[in-house]
Structures are given as C-alpha cells and as structure tokens.
Length: 116
Length: 111
Image (cartoon, rainbow over all chains, first blue to last red):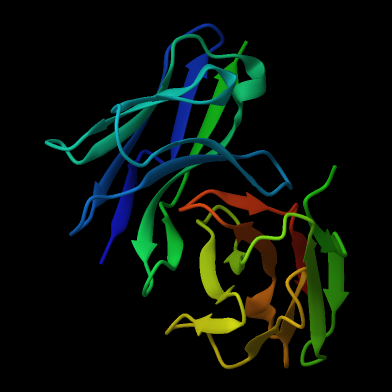
C-alpha cells in the first residue's frame, strides 16, 4: 500500500524567504506524486505532478519539486515566499485501484504561514 | 468557467435527517470522487466512480452512499447524519492519472 508523510504540520516563513515543505512517500511500485494547494474554504488545486521523466518538476506560482527515489522524497520548494502563498499544502501519491483506475492518497497537509 | 460545481456551498441538516450533496462537471471526465475533509485533516476518500463502476473504500461507513445517474452528475447521500459527519465534502473528477479537478466543496453542519 502507498502512503505519504508530510514532515511538519505547520511551517512559518518570512516574505521573501525560501519555502521548503517536506514530503516522503512509501510505494511498492514507481509512484506518481503530486502537490496540491488549498486556500481557506476552497477545494484543492494541483500545483505540480511527477509521473515519469525529469525528476525536477516545475509547477504554478513559482513552485517546484524534485523526485528523489533514493530518499523516497518529493519536497516542495519556492525560492521566495509571497504573502499569497499562505495556504495548506498536500502531498499525494497515486494508488492503482484495479486496471487503469487510480485514486489519490493524501498526506496530512502542511499549513504554510507567510509573515510580512 | 467553473468545471466542477458543488451545491450548495453550505448545508445545514439535523441529526438523523437524510441529506444529499450534489456535484456536476463540465469536463466529461470518466472518474468522479467524493472526499471527506475534517478540520485540519487530509481529505479522505469515501468512494469513486470509474464510469458507472462504483468503488467503495473499505472504511467508508454504510451511512454514506452515492449515485451517478450520468457522466455529469454525482450525488452523495448521507442517510442518517451524525455529529461526527460534519465536515467539508469535496467532489473531484479526473481523466489523467492523478490530475484531479476539485470543486469548491460543500461544508456540512449537523445540528
């Protein structure tokens, strides 16, 4: 079974500082990995995803993540935090559910706070 | 522009009174999901439809059921809501592997 662990339920950074949100996964097969962002009282929006190919993946809003198989990690980074980045971030791994059917398993989330 | 639409945005029901949440999509995706998300927790998959095939999660209570009359619509029925069922309910659709499109959710309160 696949699972996702997000280290740190709350991360606080200053505006302009580096953002680093950590995600480790467990998977018995090559994983598909995702980062979603959730703003207050809204649904989830896909930031970026890794399926195959280049291990450094660029997403929306200046975020990127690197798939490191040896470390079973998929950490999310952004060089310079903006106030609008304050939100909850979820790492997720794909789980095959029979045939070509897939479902997503989410980590517990990391709340990012950006201080002025 | 809304692609996955959930109505209503907020739903209040009484303890034990059946309630239905609705979801519609304009994406023509073959897979539709219902997630339950409680405060400060990860979304938890309740069930999903792959076309007309219903897939229930093993730990989804029998109190929760779903209907998908056509590609565009999917309903979540809670037969006898308890206080513990108060949560945000998220509908999502997908066609590609793992790229889910989420609605804005329905916040359910149980009085």
